[in-house]
Length: 201
Image (cartoon, rainbow, N blue to C red; front, side):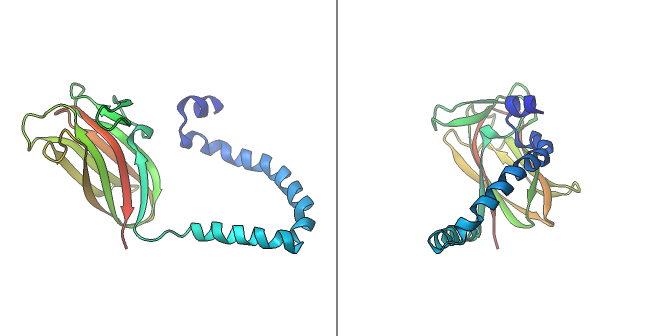
């Protein structure tokens, strides 16, 4: 398991090892808690600790809309390269046209809350398509039961040579695992910079 965690750097490979890590960590944490119990009862220590805990708890409650921001270079994908884009000077996921239709940015089985969600992708066309109306990319969100929360084909006009943001509205019916897939449709070479998931009230 350590080999996969080190070489692939993907969080899902660490999930099976987390219970063992928690058990091993519980001993030192319990010992530390026993030793610091008397110190925490002193007012000079208790007040700052209470203040820090209160701030940390309040920080967990974000205001609407709620947004998750993902760099495309950090996502999984098939036959796509991560490289520095010459326009943005940032790491981007580059998908050429010659290898055809394939998922080039993939966020599998991510636990997402139900509700109205907007997927916003910042991307551009590196090479021109045959026409402005040619579909060059597709965004799909699948729920665990196989239903599509949304699907949208993006044309070359929506992804110009400069980076543009394209928003796709989705509707997740239940809390639970969902999969986000961005396909290259093999019409031209595209560069994907960032994908945002935003929940609305």
